Image (tube, rainbow, N blue to C red; front, top):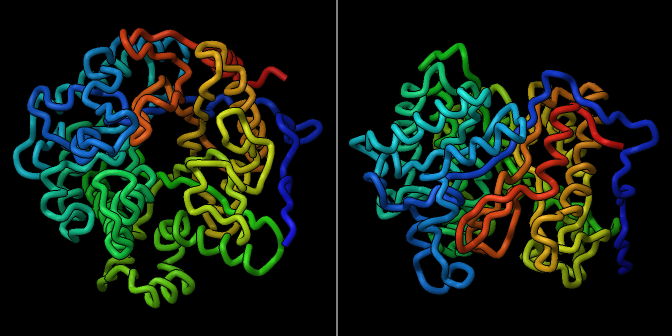
Length: 464
């Protein structure tokens, strides 16, 4: 079998001759974070522990055994961080709520102090002219609910609906854009593989947790519709890592299909295409990992949303000869090419491909947002002069601009991330921010990419 390491790779930084480099005036430019990665204050003001508090405090689970207890202290420094966003000029800020800050045990009595923190945050954003884009769940399930079975317990769908309904009522008229879940594939990594919280490595449990996440999503959308807030919209965020077979060998093609079925198609099929596809159903049934699908589940999951959020970072080239199920951890023997210094393949066309996939394969002709896109600094990189990030983001924006010019209803782009933060099991070893965070003092210092992105937002155009 022959490797084709450069298969389909576009030239870096050039979508095509004469490609558009400007964006419509209404196009939303933003940046994104998540609660556990930035807030800290893990046990302050009545907050209950989340599964990531427990996981990161367990020896051997995260890089250097440094827990996320403080993260980057956004809980106490949010006004400083919003001032940075105001200077950046973003139209919108995408962030998540900590479920256990609002419901310390996941259900029952609401923690007023937790809601008040998010009110202060939202009010400060609105005063700065920045539109809040709020995700209900970004991986930090209350530990008390995990103790009751967590995402593997079917009751989680109703727990999530009740939490969502509370939040929708509380912030009606203040938050114009909601997302139910961010990257529900994290349930596989946490329940099926054991690499993320809560740390289970049971394939059947993982698929069950993924199905229950979809069910919870549908219940939350129905709770949102019941609130009837005419000022807001709701969607869901799925990460898209298209698999490209390294060759046309049937073994490579089969791996690409299987890996897509186990990742984004597991979610997009029931969300948009009526149910799990035949390949998924047949294989998972044979393997004994097919989740129980009750009557009515698929109707709940397919409750219509207003937009799709797509998180896109690159593609994955797969080869039967050099297959690596943990492709994100190493590039050793990884087919593909044009790797960045941090090891990620630079393939900016992946955003364009994802936009076209949801339209052409799933018939989605409604609004799309690129809700995450970014890259980690290489270990050897200058912590402030991050030219490779500028090169990376420019390439993606070129391809997104092309999709917009061709008629795709892409409404906005959120750069991941506003600042270096706590990168889950990688701790502080991965730096995705356009603002540098000193690990000792937590001082915020904008990087070169911050100024570049500010100029792009101001001009609504790229500087080429």
